[in-house]
Length: 370
Figure (cartoon, one colour):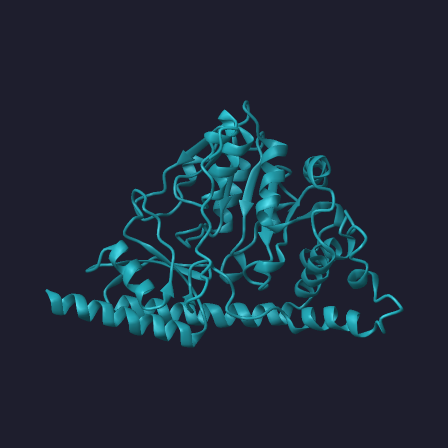
């Protein structure tokens, strides 16, 4: 760091993203990206815009007018999201990935006098963001089986965020448990981060009509295959969305670019494609989980596009290093309680077959060495 970095900057503990490999070819199972491309309608919409231009007449505004700022209200995308979930457009806000949406929400509802409560093992961006925004960050320990203890959140006296399903564990709470937390904290905001909801969990959006303290946050990065498009959104009561827009317009009004806006709108409209991809990923997830269990692994019950696993005969770091040496990237945290676990994103069937084959070789080699 430079000598000019402020004291508050020096105190930050930044989030560490998963490795983005360069040069060597890897099977990339470390960042929970979709193994499948976005809806074909995404490419068709973008290409159609360029093909309709002969070089003199401008293409449709969504495509050609990159010299102009994007619509700060993101009307077509907001409408697509609102239509999908059966809410009003003024109940939706979109952002440059769900991380920006989290920033808007944290800044809108939390400050030094309004702390945030989250699980002790969850998405690492939450504490990083609270550090940046000078928000007191409190944690509630997961149970020994890594499930959320809902009693820790009831009447907790501060705003809270629950990743449901949770990351990196992959486990989920039933909607009834989310409702209990909402009912017990009606003086505080309850944020539910549903980045992985489409892989086997029920969205809390249906609770919005009964609870004005609910904010549901989602992303296009996982089930809609647009991690590179950087689009996220929140759904809440119109007053809470207005609060978040107050932050947005104080920070980055034109926060979603024209191409990402168009791509996300088309992806949201193609329900059947999203359903098909999610079903394929879930099927591969269950086959991989069964294969690992047959090899003696502990595999948590996942409702996501990844598995959280631990070998009964090989340490977490040794397993992580062995996979990497064999061209497979996964994710590991050198942290209490989870240091022996790896998070494995679900790839294609072929990629997961190779992952299981390499795992078998690593176990065999270890056994041979005694």
